[in-house]
Image (cartoon, rainbow, N blue to C red):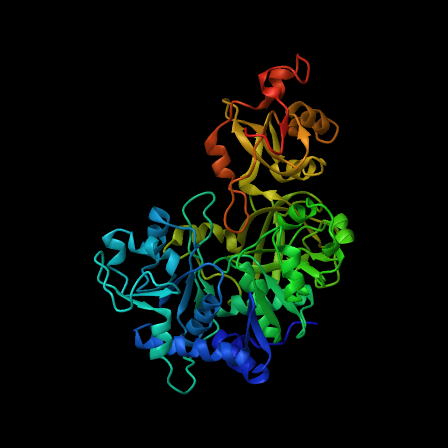
Length: 550
């Protein structure tokens, strides 16, 4: 199915919800655990919440914090804020202390909707943060009583249920909105510095989800399985919103579980799954079961192409490239694709691959991908309260993605690592991504990360952190020797260490800065120290198994 044709001026979420509910009132929109909501039922609850929030003082184009784990109320609130033309500020449910206070100070929201189990993380913040909050609405639980005023602030604590009750009046609420109005201000994960609020207009939200429909071929009868956190973009922009625009169904999982993945997919009768790059390798590491081929899933989006995975599970992987700031810029409309490629530039985007001076690099060579839209309002309007960072990202009238790509003669783009993850080793630029891709091919490596380690002379050494597959045994010397026949000499890791896990964000992105902060553990393999000795010599060459504790 190609994406619905929606004129730019009609790309306003509240209006599109009302229109889809009129067409699909009795169809199922969302399922969660054992419960299902029709479009009409979901609309009724979100309308009541919108009216309750309006009575509580929420105005058009003001930011409202949503801080919840995956639960239906998140999407009810998401719809409700669209009806109010208020700005959704989804906050990572794992944040607390200074990280949470930073966002609340930066955004200055007067209203916060927070899951009961997380409410204490908000009320524990300093007085200067709480003083700005006028309404704190608690979703679920009995921890805080409606009407209470917390001693640390002047805000009124209410409940989600109370807001629904006071907003139960008849009639449809849908405040006027424009496609260029702000819809979202999600905060980036901040793996290399303080989080930045990304100002996303309605047209960008709708355009991204339409591109997902086009890339995957989502149809009205599809059921989209969304196991990733709603407070991040993928389960929304690739799951619940494409389902809405296509009149399809979304199935929300409480959280991603590798061990339960296929059973949940089968139980939900899902045909499309929202994923990230780390999910297929994780699933592939499990022993075969009858569910490998009896689940009903046809497409996973978005992850790297993996023929072995596709043949084992009977699922097609669709790859693409997108960012919070841009939405989806590069993809191959289903079922077109080229192995290893993220796709080609979407019709609404200009894409170039450039050097450090924004000059085009020759075809096939790696450079930074820069983009700009051909259509109004389909990318961010800037970073909230950060004009300097906005200007830097959009220098020379092109948005600089920070991603290295190679473009072939047919315009297909191949990911080549992050610009900030380039390692300068003995005069050569080493792509962490390229090294990781080779290491991941070792049968005993489940997962890995490559980072720079200071060499002391202004350059770097290559440091590899690997996770050993369950039941496998591996030494640094063995892995180092295996890599010698597969990597250029300047790319070979000097340091190899084994860990039981990698630090990650809630969306599964490896937080490499945390690895770099830890320094080398006592148990590591040093290529240079072992060059003149037996590969297994020395205290740093101990055998590591999946059950070992480094």
